[in-house]
Image (tube, rainbow, N blue to C red; front, side, top):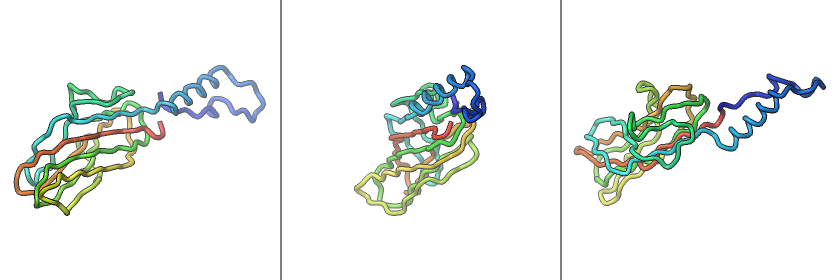
Length: 171
């Protein structure tokens, strides 16, 4: 249920009695603001990605999903938008430790439009690299977002999608 402007139904400044639908819109808006469409998914296993390859990451588990945006069975890499609006999309991706190369994360909308998110060229051979990314993205109903990772270590690396979240800010 998206946010609706109550003034489009009734303007209290006119002095006329508000129709019942005006109260329903106000109630629905308060419900929306109290529990915005949001989803948080993650992968409880490590995915192997090849060096130099940009790879869409899967999420086989959920923390919450109050708008049926993610499936743990079909298209597990996707958060599919049900309620259009401006979303804060975020991810936390862990790359296995390796001493060379770069690491990067971006968001892919509808399998076509990439939104750069974060990257790193400073790597330490004994420490896993964790990249946390946030982007504001305007999304329509049926759009879907995926998290992609890239690494150039010269060998395959394990990557774990620790968190993949979308929060509707505007409805």
